[in-house]
Image 1 (tube, rainbow, N blue to C red):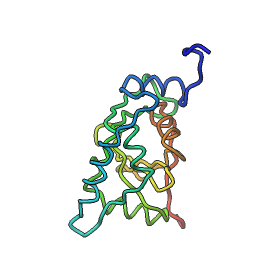
Image 2 (cartoon, rainbow, N blue to C red):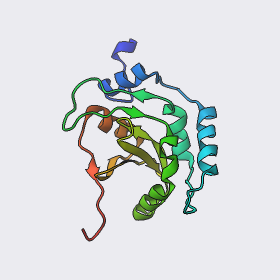
Image 3 (tube, rainbow, N blue to C red):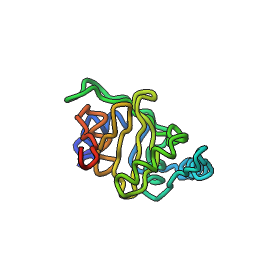
Image 4 (cartoon, one colour):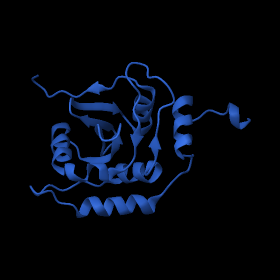
Length: 165
């Protein structure tokens, strides 16, 4: 089957945005991911909070780390996000990550940011992806692929709510 007819892992517009940013199938920068893991593990907040580092986060950093993804066009329901994969964008949010992890009964690690510091992206132990901004916490997808599609296509994410509200 010719390359241009083969199916891709991502929707066509998401795949195009990823490739424009420098991603390609098989991309894997474990050295960069390990440097980030070490930096996050070494950081302690003034309140004594520490970052969680786990395989799902390290794998996402290795595959997408350092990429700056710009959406190609208008969004479906909301403006598409510009995504930057750099977990150190959340370095000083160890308490925020720990609080969200407790609320969701999991561990959370920073993944990057969207729209030039407007929101921090995070990933949990199972690989689910979230966005945290001034309006609340948002669920972007069950995995990094779904989250990227949500962000790049401008699909409306699901707002996380606490029980009883």
